[in-house]
Each structure stands twice: as structure tokens, then as C-alpha cells.
Image (cartoon, rainbow, N blue to C red):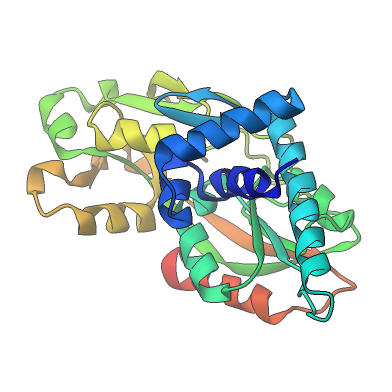
Length: 287
């Protein structure tokens, strides 16, 4: 098995797309695509499946990714037996944070890093079983082995594109993109994945599996989304055209909530410098 193909595969998973991975690796998009295709044929496993215009890693692909990382690290150690390879920092983020601050975290930590996007409960399980070093989430699922360090509150509101807001007279009929699945059972009692208060009605038009799809519907002016204030500020900084700006739906202000975010780690493990760096990023950008 060609270890270069394993590296290419891991890069596609890490960067989330063939285009981004090919740019970082410095190889052509077609060459990278062919390498991934050859690898799937060689191992007889489906690593990716089509997702819109891009690719989505399969559960089998995620398992293969973990094993590929181990193989790559082993090969590097064999090539450099006298060189000490620092263990990777392994962290997990809730979906909103994974979509928005993964790049900033990578630039700040600047070393071997594994970032996972996981649900509440799954983060705790992997920290307890030492498959993760720590995680950041908003809805804790307490475990006696874990410590939850408060980071701060993130405010969520209803937003849509300016043109969509102005084009609909009855604001209660504004179409929303909402999560396809509810949150797992949790001590905070949150059910709706995006945090929308369940006692308030909204026009649920689009049901999406991933937050990135909801963002695309928001940007294209097709749907409203319930999301953090800090994300909208970042989006609007990119738009010089007022007509393309994202605006708050003031008629739905009663749905506004604040969620407390936590750093989740083992009680037996002291707070590391990487934990402090990630916490600082969340406070600076999100809170």
C-alpha cells in the first residue's frame, strides 16, 4: 500500500474537500481524485460518498482515517528513529465551533493536531476512553471522571439575508433551515439541535443534516437560520454590498437564547497549554 495515498486521503479528510487538500498538497485536483479512487479500489472500501458538489467521509472512512494516521506516524518514526515525534493534540468541537474556528485553532497550536466534530455525549465518551484529550461543547452530559470548565455564553438569534427579509411581508412565514435530527438526551433539556426554543413556532421548510448546508441556504437567501451572533458579524464583514448582508429577524426576538460553553477534560489531567489556547480562541471570537 502506497503511504502517499494514505497521506492524500488524510489530507482530504482534514481539510474537508478535494480542492482545499490539492491546494495545500500542491498537486492537481484530478491527480488527487485519481489517487483516492485508486486507494478505494485497492482496499475495497467506500471512504467517501457524494454530498452536493463535494464529498462526505463515510463511517468506514473515519475508521480508516484513524488507522491511516497511525500508519503514517509509524512510518515517519521508522524514517527518523532518533527524532522524537510529539503526540498529536486531539480535540473535539461542537458543530457550530467546528465550522467557524477550526482554522484559527490550527494556526494557533501549529503542531500535529486532530480536530473532530462531535455531538454531546460522544465527546465525553471519547475523552473518558482517552481517544480525545479534550472537547468544547455547550450541552454537557456529566460523567464523574470529567471536569467541565466554563468558557462563556454564546448568544443565538434568528437571521436571514436582507433581500429575503424585505421580500416577505408576513415575517412568521419566513422559511427556516432546521436540523434534521434532535440532540441526544442531555441534562440541560435541550432538544432542538440548533437551540431554538421548542415552544416557539417557526416555518420549518428545509431540513438539513449539516450546519454547513444551513449556512449555504442562509447565504443564498433561501432560508433563515438560528445561529450565533458572532457568526453573523463575521459573515457581514465579508459583504460590502448592503443587499447581501445578513440581518436579524426582530419579529422572532423571543427565540433568542444564550448557551454556556464548556471545556471538557478528565479530572485527573491538568489543564494544558493547548486547552488554554483553545479556550482563549473561543472567548475572543465566539463569546
